[in-house]
Image 1: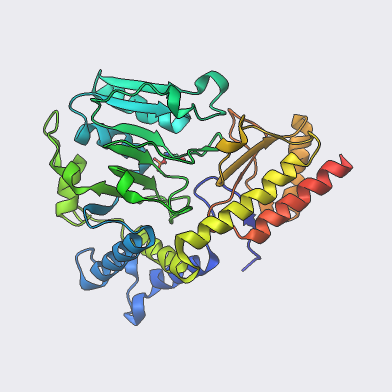
Image 2: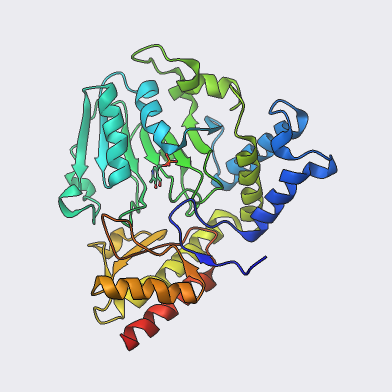
Length: 360
Ligand SMILES: Cc1ncc(COP(=O)(O)O)c(C=O)c1O
């Protein structure tokens, strides 16, 4: 195998080599059975054991209280944009719009109900800030408040969460990257392909009382959270191999100190790169307006010209660092540094930034 690159992709994103190797081995031969995990029934004892261990480790890693269901579903975070209002919205709902994904969540809900409100919106500055909580226009009667905890494209992150009786968070790009009090939330959901495993699985953590909520219309079972919960995530054929990969990743997280250790490491990793931006005498410009809103997962910055940006990406590639090009609506560079990105990868990027600025 060739040496692994430092892969700064925003998602699908880098995973620990150990997780990939364990997954590859189970794909060919699960537990010396002569059959691969993706070839086994989702109702058989082998996969049920995988699912149970994945759920147990997920619960313990995030200290999920017993009054929450943990579901492993399909359809990505995007499907949740619709399932949330279908299952939980019968009156009105509040949305905080801090980026493209938060806007898409709002747009999906607005197709389902005309009582969906925007509490604050940072599109006036291309989403380069999180609106101050004191400015949010909350409706105390709303069925829920929806937020996106980390704006993958724009490099901003909600550092604190508002108190709300039904707070719903899209945590696709920072789940398990920092410690969390799950009891603050009604629903947490996350597409797996950044911090958890491969695409094709979405993790949904939902407070049990919400499964009983009256729905505006009757739902087909596949769109109904209570049906998924009642069937232990196996209402239909579960994404078995994806869940197996999540299990390998949960084992890796446990072996490496759990979420608390990840959080400390993620803070240190991000600091290496933010320091390189801030100490560059203006050569690099962070795209986020306020340092307090900077994401520890997706670090976005620009160089003085497009030519220098292209040269930087080329220089990085020569040193084994890939997928650094920023999203088209932001430009510049985006370094995604999820749990699986080692400190050495961030150090290598920071070193290149210093060297590149000095010779440009
Ligand atoms: C914050 C956030 N939400 C939602 C999505 C969409 O996820 P999916 O492609 O799993 O539907 C993404 C994907 O990049 C994301 O970063």
